Length: 127
Image 1 (spheres, helix red, strand yellow):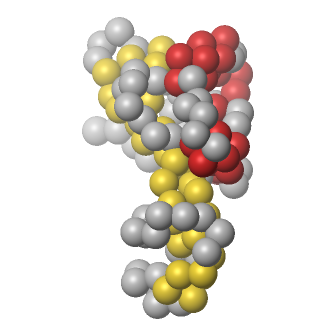
Image 2 (cartoon, helix red, strand yellow; image 1 turned 180 degrees about the vertical axis):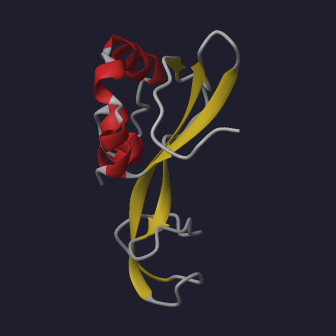
Image 3 (cartoon, helix red, strand yellow; image 1 turned 180 degrees about the horizontal axis):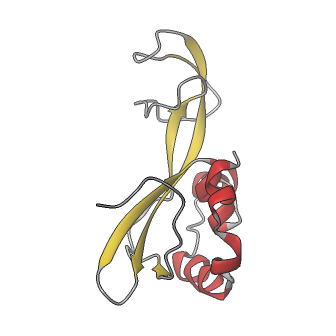
């Protein structure tokens, strides 16, 4: 049986889904996904029952493979932004301007990063 603690996994990471939007519109208080169609507007959140502002929130699905198997990881919020080194606001602005962000470009930049030095136990804890 495995004991609780911090463990290192050496794995290859890949953004693989072409149709990922990379962000969703969320409640500024509880970060629940909301049904509003525009950010920056006032909205009553059904989850926390507060009048909030609609904000974009980063979400990315990454495949990790260590040679013995593959696991999908979903990174959300500041962790996803730190991994991709961009913000949900930047991606949202491109989308709102009618410009489609280039997922291949983001994917290419992602693969250039020295992630084993970047993703440490402290990385996941820092918010």
